[in-house]
Length: 410
Image (cartoon, rainbow, N blue to C red; front, side, top):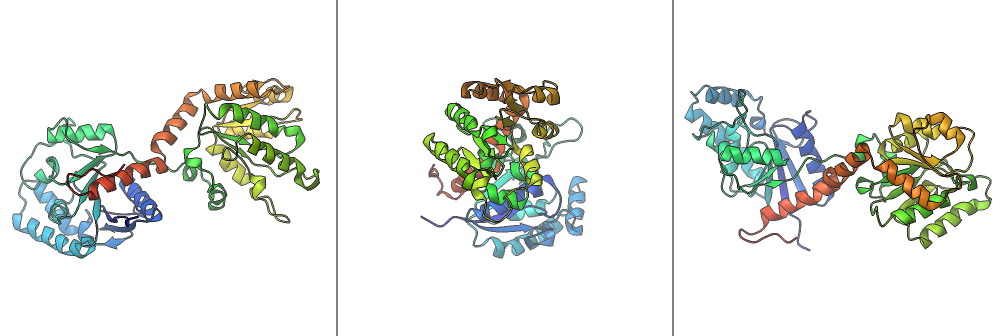
């Protein structure tokens, strides 16, 4: 396998500087490095290789920007600053196969930096978060004079990527090229980090493709005969073909009163018989004899925030704390129609008969998942989770480094 391209990622500033572009820059750099790329992050402020003249707050940069906006910019000062930036960038970019530049080729805040990049003769990918527009009516700026032409006109040899269809249309409107080529790769989100999962819990979940799991069903209960986890297995078997991303997490330990965890062993065998090894996961499998259960109540609270539905298959209960926890986490509950569950929930549950046949459980789960919230989460995971975005990002990189006129391999 050929080596992966060597990359440079550039912006005016980098994390830990706070900002939306900085956040995406940091995610891209970290995830590309984890995927085996040689990544060099270059900015005027923050982490990485620092060149102060890239920072929009640099005194020379601010002075040139103000003068350009006022229409009295000095060509000599502009070219001197651009030459300084180019000279300092050259050794940092010389060994890079692809240079991904965030906003610098679409915004006017440091046009000497823009000019230096375009003169670098590197394979450039312009990652467009924002397009310069007039403040009064939202129409694109129309100056085609240098140096504004560097951002107001499509530059030859540059691969453009917009973060949304809307932003791509802004670019095309700015360029006055309605069919101009530009990829769309949206910003991503890390569902586990957003849910506040601890590093420990992320590690426990690492074998499970949680970022692609939909629906994620949580069973926050012990593995005991009364909980009837076998019904959850049977219902999952019925739903798996219809819901290929179905993932079920059973949080609790095995029954302490069951000899040597016999019930857990039976459930694991049944899981294998049903072909659900990649679908249903027991945290009890990761337990170590003589040590505490792998997850605690804080971990379970995090899992609620990550889940699409809570499933309770028990045949009898005296209370129902998971219903309260699910309500606070805004997660629907699918459970047996026990009187105590009706009492605690006020009827706001998705019930199935206490007799507990798998078909009725599967039907109740489908109803719980047919909500605006559940559909929104599914759309986010399918379109905007970082694993999905990374596939698109790597395709952009492959296209940028491919020989001119040769399409990148799919």
